[in-house]
Amino acid sequence: MRRREVLQVIACAIAITPDTIAAQTAAKTYRIGTLTVGPPIPPIEGTGKMLVEGLAKRGYKLGENLAYEARGAAGKIPQMPNLMQELKAANADVVVTVGYPSAAAAKASGIPTVVASGSGDPVVTGLVQSFAHPGGNVTGIADDAAALSTKRLGLLKAASPELRRVAMLWNRDDRGMTQRYDGPQKPLKSLELLCNRSGFVNRTISTKPSRP
Image (cartoon, rainbow, N blue to C red; front, side, top):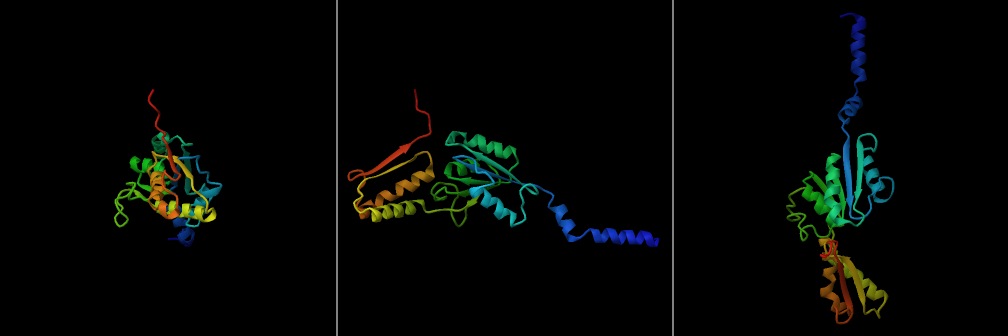
């Protein structure tokens, strides 16, 4: 082999650095979807911005190797399955959900990974089998919704000792929300807010259309 040809081979070898190899390996674009009961979560503000910034620190950068798809039902829960199908059609690798209805719709879609938040106790709502062995395709952050609601009532009572009547309004078709607001009824006596008779008022709403 001629000297010039040898130099060309060495030059090519030097050019193929680990960074170049990593760049070739990272050519895949990962797609993250978000799904909420309310408005879509934009990637440029609020929780969407925090999510994108957190992923950027781990090498997933929007516009480079990361694509972002946001969907929101604007309160129309029956639209959840359709929105989830849109995310599947967009080839989302993972879907981040807020609230039980969106988590349930994402789980039912069969998408490989669902990151759920704000959906209550995932075992009680049936999103996972157990904390020790969740199974399925759902992971994320669980909260003891019933305990939190009870503590909030306690704070209200502490702030206003004369408080005797509290009203709560929620969607009864949302199992996470129902769990959250059913929980405080048992310890109400210790808060001197007796259920119904003394003024604790439960009201629920349903997203199901009424029969004519």
